[in-house]
Length: 403
Image (cartoon, rainbow, N blue to C red; front, side, top):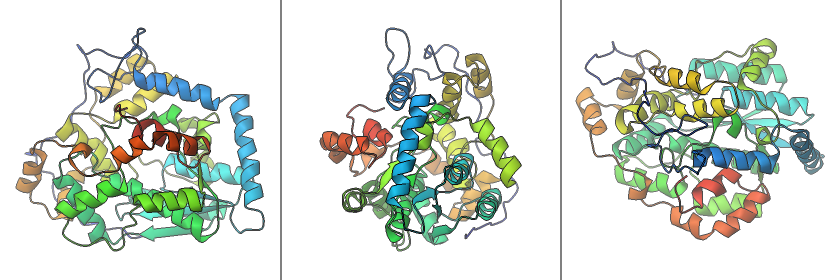
């Protein structure tokens, strides 16, 4: 897996640095720590935010962490085994070196499945993440399918989104991973993709803090990019429909059904697979770490930790008071990360600060598929119920309300 590692210069004290958030004086959700400034937030008569309500509804729909939910998922496991009979692999599991994907691979083996690990390498992996992938695959004896984007091309796309002044700095990685998973499944005739997402442990990110689709990638890159996208695996609407309708590749999120503890998962991974912790949510990739720990707090004034902290409060991992205290501390950030970002993208400090100070924009300022998704809302509901698209896609991307 390719990885560019230019040396980071000495940090410059003139650069703005993120701080913790004190929510005193703001209206907060009565259950989590989301406040009135969160994109798309509304509160019911109990003072509970729309995001907590959405999680409540999903818990009921998927019977999350209950015997019923476990039984329903095991029926899906039986379906996967039947569909994959006679094939080398019966499911695809995306791997990043992070907790959830590594645990998903471990559980797939435990359930008696024959997974193929799939990785999209945007060339910003940390050394820890790369080593975690190697260790997990070796110990579990799982094959790997990887798509590597040329590092200059990956950097050009990231630079384009930085210049676009939108909060979706790293959305190209998510789209490319989805496309790579589909390609891996189609290549090996596999009908099921297992995704390691847990709305209980991670929450659901507000659409105003992260939006992604293939047309958005294309339009922003066309406006601000400097080189053609040749190795980047974009997923336009036609490809999305091809994988969904012609290949009928199903996306399953086991952690929406079963009981899941991220802390317990980390302990198992460390004990059984010699997996190493990388310091926090999304910190296994350096561009994602920069995005969450620095870019969003400095430019847009929001701290993505509130999503995971709110999820921790809902699930009882933290008290509300503990989460608020943690939120007051500055986000963890690797030393030299900002300087690494500037050097790798060829930005002077003056240009970097100038772009940070440009007027903020959003996905609404660029061509996207959002309106099309909204028009096709009933169609995508059917697909979501059939596990052909994630239910979170239906909830967030097809609604005219921003959630």
